[in-house]
Amino acid sequence: MTDTVETDLPPATLAMVALAANIASNHPKKGICQLERLRSLGVTEAQIDMVVDIARHLRDEAGQMIDGEFNAVFAPAAKFAEAAVASGGACCVPTAKGNACC
Image 1 (cartoon, helix red, strand yellow):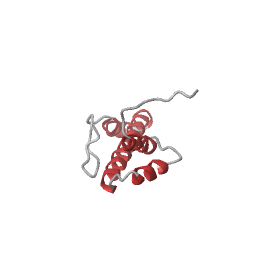
Image 2 (cartoon, one colour; image 1 turned 135 degrees about the vertical axis):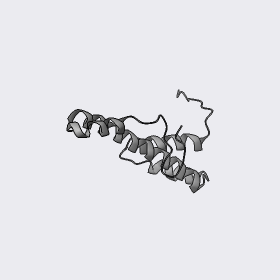
Image 3 (cartoon, rainbow, N blue to C red; image 1 turned 90 degrees about the horizontal axis):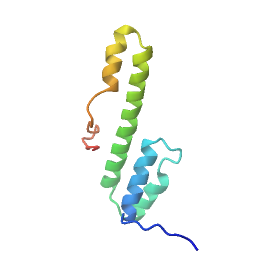
């Protein structure tokens, strides 16, 4: 007997979440399977582009924050303030394309 998990989320939503997670986490599979699934479900390229844009923005922002924290510890005193600012910032900054990530 196999237990089946019921979900209220449509398949396209699940694929978008998985795609975003793959991209944001730098997963080696890169979300290619989810991309193909989204296209087969008829999700528009514009919607997929928004998901990709937001996921990349969050991934890049996380990397910048980690780099800023590292630099704050190891950077020369002159760069300390710059590194601290880079690691902080607003709670939610829109992507370069203007998409809100929160």
